[in-house]
Image (tube, rainbow, N blue to C red; front, side):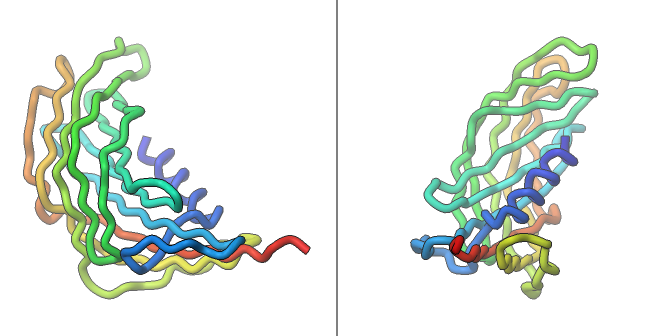
Length: 182
């Protein structure tokens, strides 16, 4: 569910695992971590598609999609490759298999194809500090999603491709500094 994804994102922020402002990866001193993230929630053919992009230290950037339609929640173990360019833009292109289920509903499978860009819009703002053992500095920038998404879950969502131009989203960049234990 979207609430679960938002809660996971908040936990990642609180743990100090979200990102840098620059578009290049750099090694952080011990006790520091960086990662970036982006999110958006477009509607495609009656389905809500929650896109969460991440660029954690030491890993390739990726998008984890979730699809909600007709009482089903569709998840995937696969990742869509992504590319972060600071707070200016994020892009993701790829196809993943979905496994869908819901309370009292039979399990079904489908596919999701994304070819999207988050484009930063407006000023960069600073998120208020989150109580933590680490010094956490989070920057936010509103973004607009552009591109297209195709969803197909037989019996739930007929194959539908939709342009998602202008869908609101957010790009985040944070840096965490945790003092070394004494």
